[in-house]
Amino acid sequence: MATLSVKSIAASCLDVDPPLSVREDVFGYIWGSMNRSLSLRDHLERISGASTNLSIFLVGHEPGFAGWFTQADAQQIQHAVDVQRELYAQVGLGVRKLYWRYIPVDEATGYFAVDSSEATELTEDFSGPNDGIDVFYVQDVTDASGWSNSNNGAGGPCDKDEKGERTGAVMQITTPINDGNNDFAGILLAHEVGHYLGLLHAGDITNVMGDDSDGDGIGSIDSTSTNLTASQGDTMRSHCSVHSDC
Amino acid sequence: MAETKTPNDHGFSRDLERAISPRVRQVEADLPVVRGDDLATLKKILRGEAKPPFEVDPKRAINALTRSERSEDVAQILSAVLSREQETTKVRTVAAHNLAMLPPEFAEKPLLRNIATADGILRDEIVTSLGRVGTAESLKRLEELPAPPGEARQRLLVLAKAAIGVRSGMKPPDLGRVLGVRWSDHRLNPLEPGRVREELTRLWDSTFGIALNPEFGFELDCGNSKNLLFLNAEIKSGNFLASAATKPLIAGLVALREDDTPHSTVRYVVFTTPAESGIEIVVTRKNGQVAFAGQARIENEALRISLRDVGQERTPTAVEGTVTNDRIDLKLRVWRGAAKSKRPGLPVQVRSAGAAGTLRRGFSRSS
Image 1: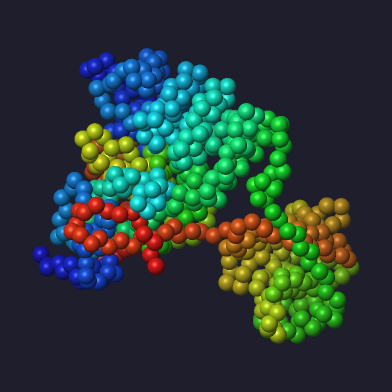
Image 2: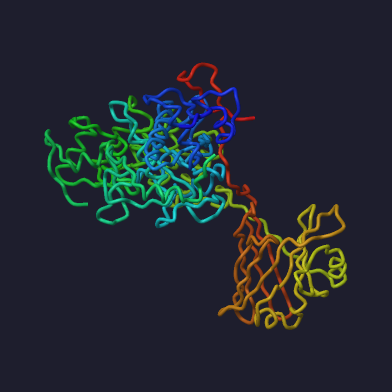
């Protein structure tokens, strides 16, 4: 196996130069530790191959957690990203850059609990860099767990300045389960971003894209929804928002 | 979804567990409804009278309860959750949100009982819900509230008061005023033929292959700049309707001239296409981006023009007008409120001083 250089990958893939904080600059984890073991080697391998970037919006955040988000919420999102990375690694897709953003409470007022139309409004009003998929975290989605734009398998748009489409995924902070395991949040994130990358529901509850055996367009997922097929990997890697090796 | 009433080991049904558990959920449309014994059990759980052997997501449980029954009983449960000070803001806020789904006679009083909360997040949601179900009594209480900080919060309060005012008939508000709906109307002034010819000599740009009418043109004075509408020479006075309605045309060009420059350049290209009931109009920037679109409908020997901005223009603008065979009247309606833009959010710049795993601070603005 070729030697992986943190400095060279950080420079060529992440556009960051020393001095580096591996956790913050390479993994993009700015919210503190979490109950996950991180492998730098695995991570470098993943992000130097075909990868996507995420612009993660905390809707209603304020510095010092003076807004709607707690530190535990922020850590849940970070945990979710790490789970998503592990799930996507099954099919050779990395999650390279994390653009952490927030919408201050004053601009987010009215979006504490959102429904599907308000989710679309969020993506119409806000957008991160065009080289990353927008993911908006809200406190509660009243009529779903999350929304994304699968476009019948075509996936979400790459030019987020295009109008008339939901240009990102919107999902809620999930209630952590009692043992502190936030893995389910990662499955949800992988599911919604999977839609954006062109995946439809699978007929299998053990698949990240969940079960929609009655064909009503509503997928179900649970804590066992962790698998991805090679075909799904091909679909995701062929989406226009996926970046090539770096 | 098929009914799966099989109880778990403790007598709670699997359906109920699926509806309120944090461990499993439907994704794109999470709309579980519970009935019968399950509904009764759900009420007991939210009242604290029953404890299931599985974990409960209180937000899902509240959403499921409201979805399942819109009754006074449910209002009382939500009211209890809303008033429970030891409960998290998130859960109390979801309860306030859901009260707005219930009949006003059940929902209003619990919301009003909590309007004085010091929790700003919760108060915003209560104000929002009162706007949806409140009566004149709510309007009175909302009028007494001090203006909250921030434009968005103030807007929520204004909307709530406006909605109640209209509904109750107590105080029909000037919606345009209170919601900040402000348009300014600007007439496009016809230019004398001499001015048209003068402005044409100042036009320093391609005319997209058309000859421009040296007799008719319009001007919109925008302070430090002027927008000039030049018409295709094929559109002639005395025959405006027929000349514009018989074939596709580049009907005109809109040129922009800044006051401190001697020349103008083309800003927009006006395309017209005859249609069944009049003319379809598309106005593009020179890069091809559509800026305005609309129609001119034939009514009583006249064309009624109605265009709206549809592109990247930051200020919503409408163009209205009338064309007869020998007269063209055009008016611009310009939005006077905040200009629109796609906002990028605030980026994060974080650099921890300590080792990985130390307690994080919040976001900070990047410089």
